[in-house]
Image (tube, rainbow, N blue to C red; front, side, top):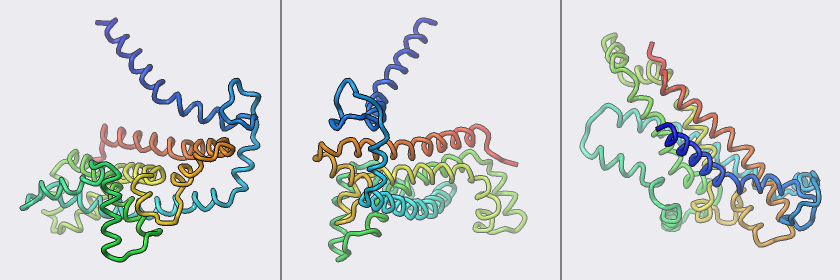
Length: 265
């Protein structure tokens, strides 16, 4: 039995190494001194590609657009995700299961299907693609992320919190605002962090909703056909990893701690 556990542990570490080895190469070649970005062995280490990346206004614009879209999509997702979770957690009503299924469809379907559907809807409504169409596209799956985190926390909260509040004369909205929301703090924060990180990284849906605008992932895709600028592309990819990985780890930690010992006082 002990040998089986050791084999499973080794297999798990091997799987993690296989998944993260390409990321290690990106980080390594961002410091490559050679003009040929993927030359091996490397000729040395340098920071000149970081300096050149900082001088590129197109990179600044792409980063600003991605951050702005992610912030707006996260705010919308936190509001709608919390409200839908509160509505679906306790009450039973006609069509609840169908509504829940429709809510998770944007994240369950392939991104290309969601992107095409959004593009068709915007064209039918005669809405020009731009900042707000990207925000709407990202919010469709960010809502699901926040909703799932909040629902998971609500299911762990004892029903006596609702019952005691109602017995004292509070209505549903008052109970939600003063009793339930304070208990959802870490779940909301974790859901918001995950939604923000996923929005920054989103490419497929953005391709159909961005029009002429270029978020950071779209900018990276456009650079793949320019081999002389591959080193700068590695720098930007490394910057995205440095930005999103700590956020995802923080969200995981908040979710784990909150689920292990939710505040039910």
